[in-house]
Length: 200
Image (cartoon, rainbow, N blue to C red; front, side, top):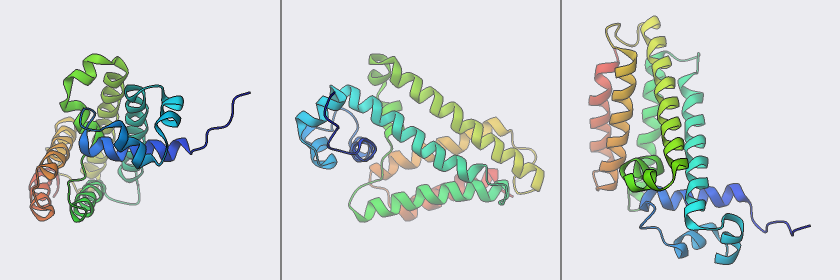
């Protein structure tokens, strides 16, 4: 029987995802990952075998975690559809504000991975994680938009599919521009302008 691992795998995945989401795959060193996770290189690779395997596992964990957090808001029947959209955007903007106080944008592991096409080409598991994440998030947003159209908080003329795509596009753009140094206040104004088409 093998010895039990001397670390909490979920905590390690959270820690390394926090590095990958800001720096991406290529610009995150093994030393950064070990320091962030608080484990030795040998322990890390005994558990995950390689940086690529660690990235795939961290991406899957990160995408599921944030998708579940957004799902809890976007399916909250105690809020109007419009309130659900605003609440998700507020969470994202708060992340950017908090990260800027630490001297950088919040980043996003999914956005980084989508923009680094060789990752998708190199490992089809990454492509499957990204495709599922986008499909599921768009579906959740469409549900919230349709709910908003029923309760009057989202204009009836908005196509739910296009509205969901607009929301994701605004969020992904905010993540990129946050990394580029745009201030949280400017990101908030941009987000509100992007949401204007979706809200009454």
